[in-house]
Each structure stands twice: as C-alpha cells, then as structure tokens.
Image 1 (cartoon, rainbow, N blue to C red):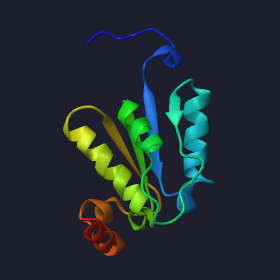
Image 2 (spheres, one colour):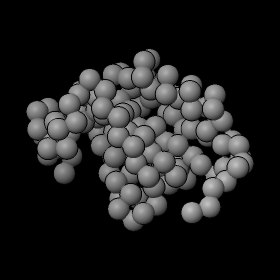
Image 3 (cartoon, rainbow, N blue to C red):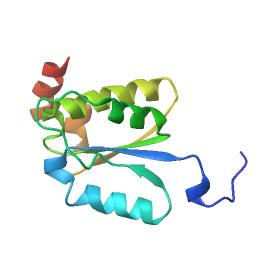
Image 4 (cartoon, one colour):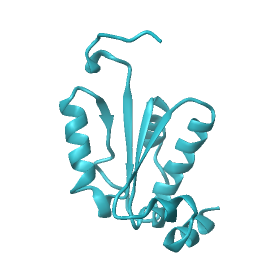
Length: 129
C-alpha cells in the first residue's frame, strides 16, 4: 500500500464526531475535536446541538456522507437521543457499504453494554427500531 507524505490538512480526510452533547460536549469530545483540528485533520462537530426530539438535519447527514472516518463517542445517555441513534444508523449503513471507517470510543460506559444492547441501551435501541 502506498503511503502519502502530504500533510494531514491536505488529505481528503474528513472526520465526523457523533456524541451526546449533554454527556460529552464539554469534556472528551471538545478535547478530541481540538486535538484533531490542531493536527490539521478536517473535523465536523455539531456545535449547535439539537433540541430533544428533533430530526437529524440535512447538514448532519451531508457531513456524515462526506466523512471518511466517523468517531462515535458512546456515553451513558447516547442511546437516549433519537438524533444520536439516527446518526449511528446512517454511519453503520455507510460502514456496511465500505464508505467509512468507524472508531468507537466508550466514555463512562462498558463496551459490552453497547455491543450486547443491554442495560439502558437495550430499551433505547428497541424503541429506535
């Protein structure tokens, strides 16, 4: 595989951050965003936040579809957000088609709770179906 010597800021690499704002916006997500952008990585973060119950916006869908990498910050209340689950569904469909690389980050939540859809994630995921 050939490697590129171009700076990260010149590479066509968009990173989309999916996260539950009230859980992680002012801690891990803001730090991750700052470090990525300071390193020259083009990173999309929804800094507006959506009111509860809002549908995922066309702007967010476009950002997901343009991204090459999606970082999903799973937190305790991630599954409680319809918007987060809509983002997750779009991201996972893109991953299944080979269009995006997904990096899960588990923040104050056990990875097995998310992967086995147990605990509070069970009801949240079932309700989203």
